[in-house]
Length: 112
Image (tube, rainbow, N blue to C red; front, side, top):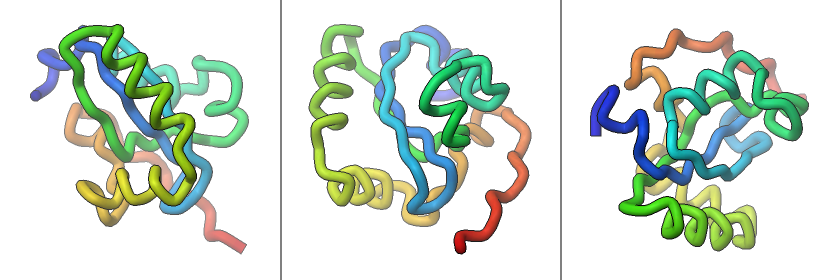
């Protein structure tokens, strides 16, 4: 799906602070709006506190109910399974928000 087509579609997504960093799984009916909230830190809480602002995986659904079920399942997964899910389609952890016209983020600080 491209651009505005995904604006109002039930979507499960994962944002990350950096490759192999902190990850967050969420659900929304407005992926572009939610990406904007994560990037500007107006979506308060865990993602803002942990700099999870890079879209690394997403999956669209027919209904919000099916998206919520999928989100809850993924949230209960082991971290290794979530990393596998991301790396299956996005092995370099590229910020997929760039595909929707978002500006690149500053590179994350090096891990210590």
